[in-house]
Length: 317
Image (cartoon, rainbow, N blue to C red; front, side, top):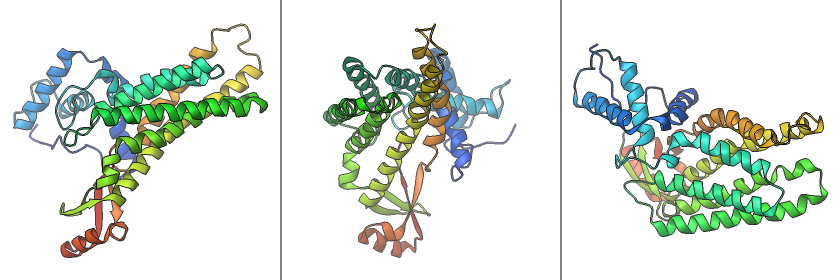
């Protein structure tokens, strides 16, 4: 085969929603975390050799090259090239969140359980954020710690306060408290983790890759998009699962299986997250457009010099 492709460009059109969904289905594929170090090194060799201009090894196809690239993308940092902590990889999102979400919606009635699972969830979020930090602008550990403490505190205050408020409401109301706590924590955690972007702005380019400058408006728009996608990602598992469980328990289907609620809710969350994770990550383009008139005056002047019609920025994940 003589056809050569640029492996640094996703194989699916990222300007289209379903193209982004396909990309994130490969990026978040849980099977990638099962790859051994030997398999990772083999995939890395195949990809690096192809990028250098070597021909595709006998017995392999271009599709095999792409699959090797998918494995590499799931395990190595895109900027530093370092192997990422396994539980912080995007491919660990579905199994880890399946366990955490399932336990949060199961063990929500007692204060010790609420404290433990909200703490566990924010500890995992901090690990993911640190593992996927920018390689060009490293995230200081003190910033990670500050975000972690405030997000955990916000989640706990929300969960414990709402637990008190819903005691007089129908039992199903209490099942939605974990979701409210997680949503509140996302609105605290993500902006704090990216506080430098809010303070200094992020780089904005025009359609011809000309740098227009750094924009705080683009940073706010990008961070809001990330927060909304994270909240929506958790919505099916944390909203539909309680409704299903309430209906199942009212019918007495688990009356003789006291052990069943926890694994059943974890399974429900796993099914929802398998689809919600890539589909919500894909809601907004990674490289997102922004209208020139929404940028700061100095960037608008810069756009006039280049006769730019629209700006683009990397929103992050």
